[in-house]
Image (cartoon, rainbow, N blue to C red; front, side, top):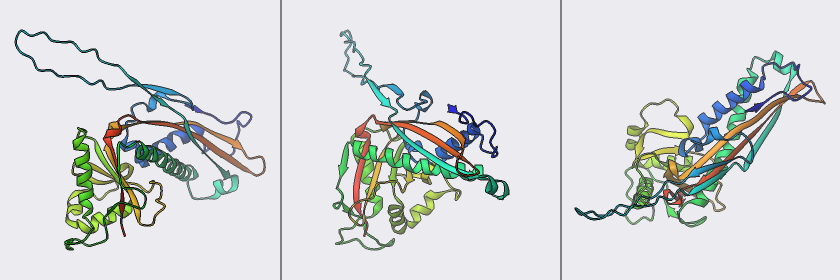
Length: 305
């Protein structure tokens, strides 16, 4: 990891901002907060350092099984070691000033605050980018912006007879059905929706929500519940791109193996601001993402009015 003070700025007043330490803290906060880090294959993160790096991923081969009778000849299959390339072709940057006087006289730990704030800003941009790529790479998408299943607004116990609205739990059940049809493994499945969907899910299924929440302490990386619903780990995010039609939302489900991601805080440096008594802290975050298995991603547009 390349982290440094810029050349010519060896002696800076705000020694709290040691680049290497700050970079590690930003990365730690980032990984804790990011939903994408929890729902994608991140095994390749340690293999990249800079923008333009590539990772060669060997695609899992398909093994053919044939019937066998005693004494018959077994045909040997040649496995294909197809490669998929993950390119680190995305980047985000941040830069902020730390005033000498404010830093020295404030009771606030500027390094901690800046680490958290910087990480959350990077997280939001990164998650939005990768989620958009997963939506576009999904093997099946039901509905469209302005057309989708009506989840509606109602309380638990309300009769849905004769209503076009369905219980949001049935949305989740249908996603499970779709992944089952594609032989997607049940382990490491996830379901992703925004807070509006979970608000409706809670209204319609208060007892279920109470049973699955378990511990009340905050969970890592956007995870909503300790338990599972229809074998899904349940995640929440505000980083779906907004629909152009009012009251329409997106939900996405999949398997952790569907998408590979790799990200890295490539550089953190501190330079002296030329126009004030302050340090400028700036950083570069690089990443790549690749949908490996589109049939393990299912997207849907829904109406909540």
